[in-house]
Image 1 (cartoon, one colour):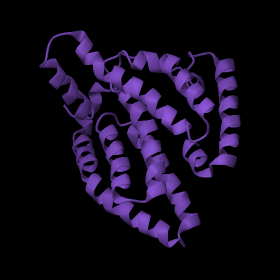
Image 2 (cartoon, rainbow, N blue to C red; image 1 turned 120 degrees about the horizontal axis):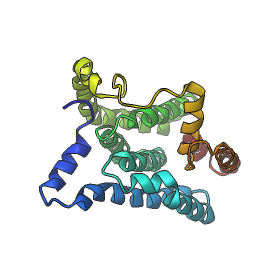
Image 3 (cartoon, rainbow, N blue to C red; image 1 turned 120 degrees about the vertical axis):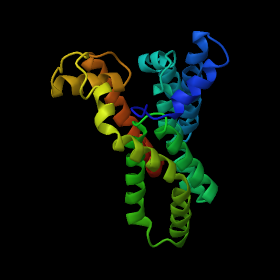
Image 4 (cartoon, rainbow, N blue to C red; image 1 turned 180 degrees about the vertical axis):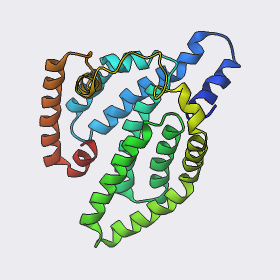
Length: 239
């Protein structure tokens, strides 16, 4: 079926050949969830060690992290790709080597073939690169790094693009199996209600806990303001 990207389902199918234990199907999500905590620690260590320990600790106990780390779904892998690609992009910008660019783009390609949500933060990261290009286009070192990045993109992009073509070529029949047309999902709560609940869940609290979500967002804003003074590039990518 072409409703969902194939890579994570292929992984689960392969693990299913090793045994019938349910834990095998949940193992990739658990590993990805634990790895996300470790990578977030590496990323936040750019700010300070206390920030890295606090951020990694909060992620480890956040409700979405715990839930997705115990399910046989690709959402934990998506979180790992989101954090990992940010760290890899920073390294690519710092070193400018073709290998670093390939690692970043390869991470995004793998993430896209696991879940389409990857396209959203991939677009955000590419947009960040575009903003940086406006300020650094006169730098010879930057132009060289950008040239190597474009070369890596030519290598990594064909597979995700090919799968996108397959998906949309069959979109009409496969969409009947998705939330776009299915009649078995709860009624639409409305855009405002959905947006507020989505915001609360995104920051790691339950739906309806708007006060907690607001407090966490304020703390995140203060941390971004502090980070922007220490490392503008990292803060731009986080935003």
